[in-house]
Each structure stands twice: as C-alpha cells, then as structure tokens.
Image (cartoon, rainbow, N blue to C red; front, side, top):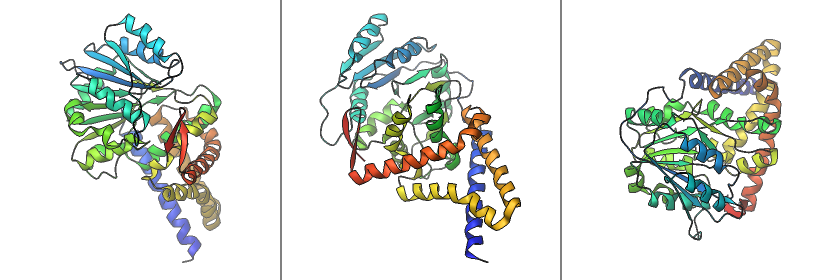
Length: 367
C-alpha cells in the first residue's frame, strides 16, 4: 500500500469521525429542555463590563423581563472609558435589583475579566452564580429551564454557547466558524457523561455555577492569568470530580459577538488554539487536513472518492447547521470563506504567540 493511499485513508477516516461527531451533536439536541423549575433559589447574575455602553441596555432589558424573579444583578465596571457608568446609573433607577460597582485596580498577573468576575463573586449572595458577558441577551424562560436542567443533572456548572446573531456578511463569514469547529470536534454530551477532563468545553458568555462549589474553589482566581478562562475552568472542575453540562443556546440564549471582520479576527485569534486542547500544532494539523482531504481523496479514488467526500461534506454541514440553527444553504455557500478566515485566524494566533502578547480592550494580554 502506497504512502499516499495510507495518508488518504487516514484523512478520510478523520473526516468520517468529524461528521459522526457533528451528527451526534445534532441528534442529541444539546439544548435546554422545556421543563421549568419554579422552586426557590436565588440567582446572582454577574456581569463584567468594560466599555459596554451599547450592549448593556439590551442585556439588562432581557434580565428585567425574566419570568424567574428571585435574582440580583451585579455589574462590575472594569474601568470603562465610555458611558458604561452612566448607563448603569440609569438602569439602577429602573429596578432595585440592579447594582454596580467600579472594580479595583487590576493587580499584576490577573486578566481584567477574571479579576472582575472574582470581585463579582464576592458581592454575590445567591444560591447560584450566573456569569454573563455584556453582549448576551436572554429569553424570558431561560432561568427556570436552566435551573431545572441543573438540578436534574446534579451539576456544579452549566455553560451554554449562545445562538449567534449574524446579520452582516462579515459576521457570517467569521462567527459561525467557532461553532462549526466545536461541533466537529467534541460531542457535547461527552462533557457530561465522561469524567476525563480532556472532554471539556466552556463559554464564559454564560456560566451558571452552584454558588457553594464556586466559592469553595474560587475558580476565576485559579485561572487568574489565563485569557481563556472558560475551558480551563471546565477542565479543572472535571478533574476535581464535579459534573459539568455544556449546551447550545437554541431559543434561550443569544449573542452578537463581533460586528466586523477585524473585530472577529482580534477576538478569536486570542484563543482559537484552545479548541484544539490548547495546542497550536494540533490547530495547524487540523487546518492542513481541511485543505488536503479532498485533494488526497480525489488523487487516490478519482471521482468516486470525490463524490463520497461531497456527500460527507453536505451531511457534516447539515448537522452543524441543524444544531446551530443556521441556514444550510448559506452554510454551504460560505464554507470557502470560512476556510480563508480560518487560515487568517491561524496566522494571527501564531503571530500573537511569537510576540508573546497582544491587546484586548486597551489592555495587554499574554498569549
């Protein structure tokens, strides 16, 4: 058997596995069930905010519309230079449950978000701590559904990847790529079912903790220097024997992350390697496999091989689109642009690593 045939067989097998993972994620319906929990239990909603004057009104409005009323809201203004403080003062006047404070100066060896979350947790008095990013919005019934799932599965942490809102073409080219990578590489149900911490995923945009578990572990403090805190917290929780659930936002949690190509590039380039167990080598090998698979298959098996590749490609994209609530036609058409963006993203990520640091929200971060 020639080396090319062996390589082609390996690449094809990997593509088959990725497609099976995507199908498992679609079939398992990794969403919050419709059952609701109306029992008592105070939820502390904790929001780190740095220059979020545009996003905060949408989030706070969705919080005030929640059907679950036993909540307190704490916002940490992380030394914003825009009108974030003025916005918070306006919304505090609308509802007594909304409170805010200006964060302490950032200590050495901490990232800004981790320190803001650490301070927020110290203010919280709830039975549950829900950390939200300011660009998230919530459906009215999400807390009842989340608490019901949380208690039924006896979780220490429930983290949700929001349904991404991508009205602009630049967002469609960039933002869905992360969900596609996640749903190709990790069956989400394995995070809950398997104890191995390698099966981990997390999204800091929505992280619901058991307050006692969080305060015993001080989890943001444990990862204080890490710019990608969410996945690392999940791995450490699982290593400590705690149960973690990972779901998709569906019709419950929404987000509009970045509104331009360059915003997406700056945001994702900080942490794209974490989708590959934190390894840039695995990230590059995955990228090579995307480009090499159709070429190698066609070289070895001609048109029959290429037909098999196209069939797997369509099934893969169909599964991801179904799970992510994306339009299949757009997903298929825009795939080449996703690959081009992924190529640019890898370059930017490696360049940040070579330089040892980058900037995010006017702060230097170590990459």
